[in-house]
Image 1 (cartoon, one colour):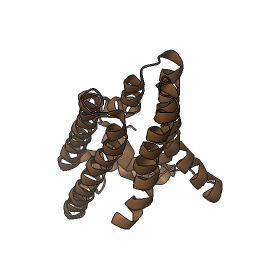
Image 2 (image 1 turned 180 degrees about the vertical axis):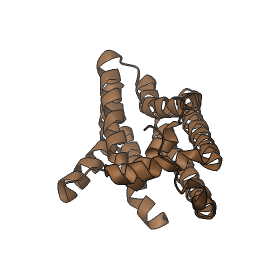
Image 3 (image 1 turned 135 degrees about the vertical axis):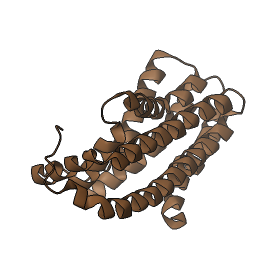
Length: 216
């Protein structure tokens, strides 16, 4: 895990901070240019990955969407701190969606799990929907959505606090580290919680025999 995180730390934290400090000296009166160039590094890293593998994973899509929001903010405002906050607006939106989905018949984590396990295979989707009949699955889906929602909203709140209390260079270093720390922690918890749920589901699978699948 640490070996996989190191390249991301270099691209998303160290290089943006160094570039920002360098450009800030060259353009002391231009607040937008240094922060705008520094914000491009995470996106460029994903573009290089895409060029090599011709594929884009979920995290890559999130990064590109975040860049789009940041770019709009750069064009609309000249406030470098607001630009930094905007980089987590997508994170906040996902966290808020996770929490609000608890009010729906099925929370968002159920659909994420179904996409991860069943993909677009209609037969596997049909089989996966049957598990919603188990009360335990409903609890697992709601707990998972709640934990992810709290984690993502907390990351956004932390970013807002440090953006308006610390120098920009320090923010560029801290925010990717905090984001990855929160993300990896919740992912590790999700894997542990999911494995425990799978063991429980296997014990309860006999309940599903002869039970039709609910509506998607």
